[in-house]
Length: 103
Image (cartoon, rainbow, N blue to C red; front, top):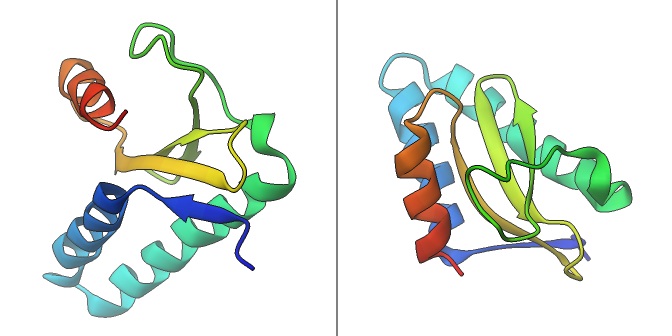
């Protein structure tokens, strides 16, 4: 058992990230995808290690940085619920809108 589940659109986020990186370097895309999944698996054991972003969402989500990508997740859900994965330099208003859409 994985101990986590991904919002259907979080799968799309990961596919988009992989596809973007693979345009220049398919091996780097595979490594980045693996690092993100390793980061998610690490959250299963210690789900409250991430940080809160109350200006982005009032929901009890936490965020964990893996290189330049951010994993948004619900730490109290069983299994751990990954809501989104996005680049850390995205516009905060866009991130807030994405999180609102993925309730």
